Image (cartoon, rainbow over all chains, first blue to last red; front, side, top):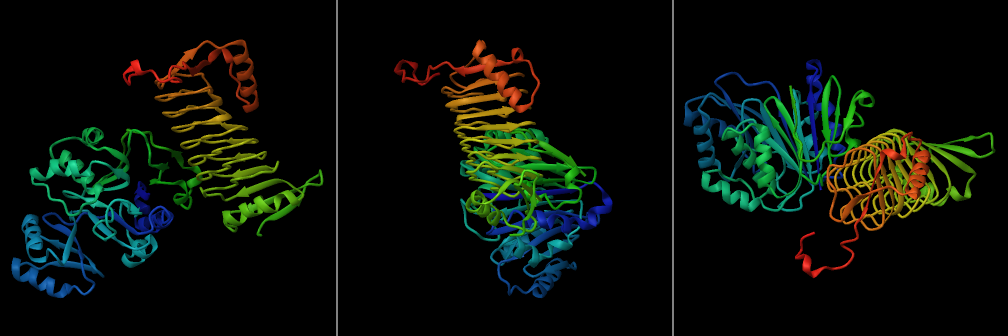
Length: 299
Length: 240
């Protein structure tokens, strides 16, 4: 079991309240996923010519000051670093591949790259959704849309790296409720293409598969369609891109999902109870997404 | 308890449970252990907000109205009680219902009436996948459409669908009967369309009247078992 939540704010005036609106949704899914939680939030694009990395320190003692100095001396460029405990957002004008290679080479054990892009930030950690939310200040997040997850691990370890969302490429993320039975065969297909995996988690296989299809030129619809053929198992997937939320359930609709939509927002959750506190939910259009149908909402 | 009692004109009482103040567990404990000793005939439940297991395991004749959306397992294992949900329900409403009546004014999610032995389940809008899976005698009347794999391995009882039915309707069905007014996307293994008998028209008319749905029974198709799966056929070579 796991819980998924998504919220896309249509009314720009409400985007400052994204965190506040989303928090009861995430905490409402605690019983479905008490061991870890995470989210991807899509906020303001960073300025042109810059890229941002979300980093997670393996140890609470990691010295971010030392890291900042090492970055500056290696690249001869000042790192713009926003630190929240073990989490930091690094914004830079340095070409992203060089930064990635340097991070992997110099900080393989100390840092995990949570995501790369220009509008998405990822926070994920172990603990109850309430604890994780408190740790990273989810309540104060703002932006246009958010993809959240509460995890009850069934197939791989409980670590911050195994928590959702998973990401691949730039500004793409995926959360999953369910289990895949062939993540290893997907992995064996992708690794020879040079696609690197960070964990042994089944969701990472789906995330990297779909992002690979998108990079190969598939539309989201085509990528998801090829996923129906390639991915064996049960799933409700919620995906986020820079300007979209996308939702899909497997052919048997084995894992739940419910959608509430009105003029101000689209809210998605595994169960209605985590939507019950949203403003004017009584008048929202509620529906259950059909199996094997892709639902996409654009900001 | 935070419930409020009100005397009715017949001397019986109506109780109010506010689930923003009372837990489902406390309420259900009252319904299980104290209701039969009380003078209560009607119960209103407000602020259900999608909570699970509301009014499960009732064993006494009582009228219950739930004002809003309920979560999973609502009115599961119901005996004798008459439960109305003025909203939508999550998975497995009236699962294993034994008797009494459960009415959903909105939509029902998956596995509505699953394995129900008796009584009546009415869903005024659509029901999702696996409606009436393994039903064993319950009558389920759906005002809208039902999702894929409905009445899978249905053993006894009736499933009435006033809208359309999804894929695999009545797969591996035993002696339950399905009536469908709209389109059937596909039939499951061993399910077939048959003409309605005079008895079917009578049963269907009664069920539609019970639910308050005004349709002509002539508009419905009957789906029942071809009974080809009842006996092992070694010559079938695993193809049915």
